[in-house]
Amino acid sequence: MTVRNIIILLVLTGLSGITHAGKVYKWIDENGATQYSQKPPPKSVNTSSEVDVSQHANIMKPEKRGKDYYCGDYRLSKVQGNPARIITRLQENLINWQREKDQQYERRLNVTKQMNQAINRQLDQRIRNNGRNYSSSSSSSYTDRHKKELRRYDRAIAQIDCKIKWNQAKLEEYADEKKTIAAKYESSRNMLNDLQEQKIATCGVDNREGVIVVDDQYRAYQRCSRQFDRQIKQLQRTSKKAERDYESIQGW
Image 1 (tube, rainbow, N blue to C red):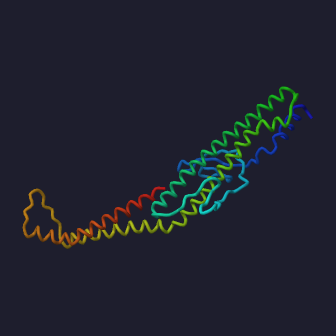
Image 2: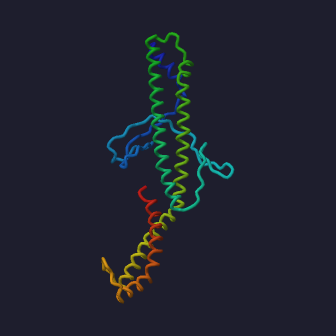
Image 3: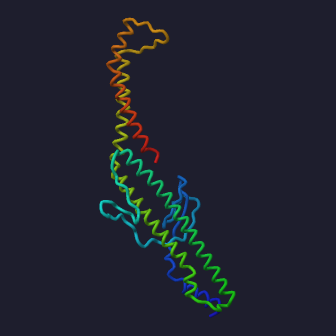
């Protein structure tokens, strides 16, 4: 066995247990979001790359502590209050947490690259020195800082995954509420349109401008309009609130 092979064997022995690497694919989806998966991306994706990311051995799940639920160190918010606000907050959480997960992945990748570069530099140095004064224990300790960082990022990513899955489950619980909000908006808008059309059909339309002569025709129109105006104003307030709720849960 050559000196080079001996050195490589020693390095690999000293670095065993650094990480259990898995094949992970990285690509940009149709919405411009960075995606990671252990399965190859869809055929519609033109370019992708394999990423050296360790598989998370421990899948984190929400854990109840006292009256609250936690994902790791993160306390999950209680879901209560106005359904539209809850749905909006849950949908915002998904966007923010997915962005946070992408950032953690990018940082972990940088640490992996740094660790690999450090290993390669040390290997080249040992080869140049023909293995003199080489210690496998020193090689292992050389990467302890990187290993610690990788474990920290793995925990952070697992914690975010836990938060995302919890959030998705809550959104599924509010699927019927989301349909109800949309139906309420559509119903209030239709009722308002129907009442306004009924007013026109009953009272007619007053198109006079400028100086208005208060005559019997004008008084009759005002009396007829008052029968509808109060209901119309009330329906306008209801419809406006329903519209705000509906728009707040759209576009996610």
